[in-house]
Picture 1 (cartoon, one colour):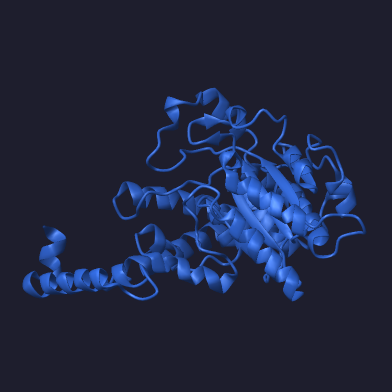
Picture 2 (picture 1 turned 120 degrees about the vertical axis):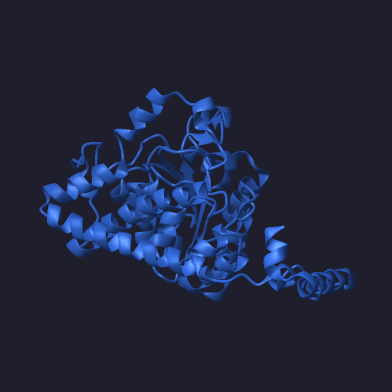
Length: 369
């Protein structure tokens, strides 16, 4: 399977389902049981609803600036289902769906509410902390993968980044290092066509992003990122090669998942300024939820009763994690906890000053005024 899927021209895009949910490549349909297929769809629906809920919370002032994932559920869920639980995920800030596929700890919401400890829970599901600086996490993923290889671990590292990140030196340095040291790294580029307001064609003159892998001595493959079965089969093949390559094959793979960001870059962005609504609607016709849902419906794996039960469960789960996050009290002393391994004199003085203000005025007065 790995050779069939990965050893193709960088512009020979892998697709299993077309926009209408019809199978166009029967030989590539992954061997997944019915329960797993329905679970994938549930997680995609959950990710879309999570996205809507987070945006609503942000608009109400109950959440910080948030990056929407809508339109990218197919790539995030499909690729993560192809991994082993022991594989480690490194992500930018939009791949909430990958976390959903790993169980999404409720503490994750705390990060978006301003509490860094929301990142800590991700370690329990083998996910590195969320990264805000563009591409800064990509070299870390390669370093982790190299260490896993040297230890003899049967684990791969998967690093998500956007098309805009390919204009950052960190991506090229990381891929060059991965090629030289043959690390078990899957570079997963979520090409959603826009790096904030900069279109993909302004990022690179390359015909595809996938072809950039050739310069570093490993394969690049382009996949329909709005097709969860296609992203599953490509990631599965890339993982297989990363851990057990054929003779002469390099372990790393660059996966370019071609997709579209339906919403704004973040809740601080207005995409109407730089995008044509006709373009957005054309991509909405390829919606991964509609496509995969139709596939399951036609196979008799989904019906209206199941959808209603699924929606009810998702709503209850979302309500629970939001309630738990909002009930979690912040401790002002956390501001000083992880600035340095050992606190400096200046930091201790600032801490003491804050405690003096709290004793003098009380927390409620300080928050109100």
